[in-house]
Image (cartoon, rainbow, N blue to C red; front, side):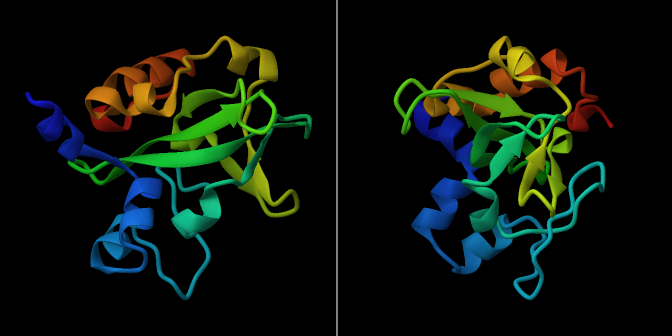
Length: 161
């Protein structure tokens, strides 16, 4: 498969929303979002719908309430209409030295009181998790890092339901 063909099979919300804000394709990509609402349903059903623009840059906390990073992007599986994973940035200072981790969407639990997502693992567990640049995470349709992330976090793959 050529690079251009590979690229056409996966896309991040940030890329689409920046390329076509509030146009037809951006509206379709917002995964069932109703602009009148503020919530996004996940595969596990544990949160309501939210606009992709509000997801990006949202803080991520560990179970103890300590901020451990923020959502940098969301990667969609266009062929199955599922969210492949969130790209969460950890560490670094003002983007320098930051590591990007693919985290299955179902592992992010939005907590209104925190105005952020809570994950059920520690910063040390995240430090040992699959990571790479955003380009690496989405290379070849993002499947390699998707598979590694679902395996590492022991999450049932949405594509096997």
